[in-house]
Image 1 (tube, rainbow, N blue to C red):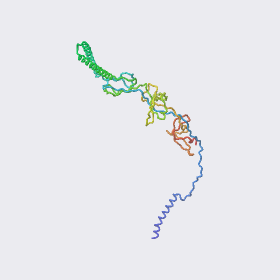
Image 2 (cartoon, rainbow, N blue to C red):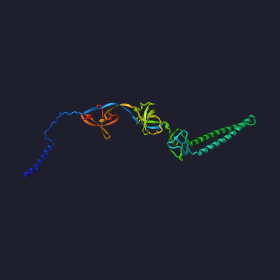
Image 3 (spheres, helix red, strand yellow):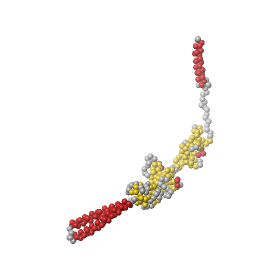
Image 4 (cartoon, rainbow, N blue to C red):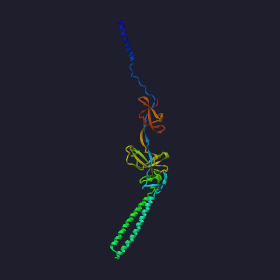
Length: 352
């Protein structure tokens, strides 16, 4: 019985001992320790390198711009009437005074005729009153009539004079109203668009047509304030309209003296040589005066391309590392501007 008890306790003890030995072996407790050797010298880089340098670069800034018309106008109706005829369409060139729109004028003509008839009637009455007044004056001078009769003749004549003036004003107003039925071009120019068609009834103030003068085109651009403050009236700037392949010089005609607080820019308007092909709203580009800026410049042959990315090899702490960079303008066959990724004084690896 005692032997069985001993065997019962012996087996667990042996198992635990074997487990401890296995853990010690896994922890590498029985291997010889080798102290680290901190005296091993690092191998120096022996390849060729080049120091990154900077250079003063003339930078030209391009600003998006828009062709605008300095002289433009909208045509509207002054009366309530249907449109009788529309004499022009979009893109048509008109001269000042040309008939653009004709409104229905039958009622207006009737008003003119009525006002004219009233004026004619009053003029006839006034002529008769003038004769009566002259006769009353003569009879009074001869003592053949009472002074009261003369006063009545004078009063009648004065009332008819007032009636004539009123009738003349009404005739003038009716004629002005009739003239509003014919809408003419206030300026010479080109029709942009028309907003109504024959048969439409228009109201006073309703816009019917827009016209711009193609001889008064300008270039308008929003220039950041750092550049705008250096511009002067009359200064000449290079302008390009790429869609028409037009290039030339434009003169600064106006600088709006209030900055856009959100964009921190000023609105600059330039006078440009008129071209019959130019139209308001077209895209243009303005070249601002160049300024010198110190930038990092390297040889483009040291750049390796990975798709749209550019990479160079840089020696950092005696180790060669690959670094992505962002490049700018090319100054020549052996020079390209680096916008980011490199600093002056760093070493570029030429050969490893």
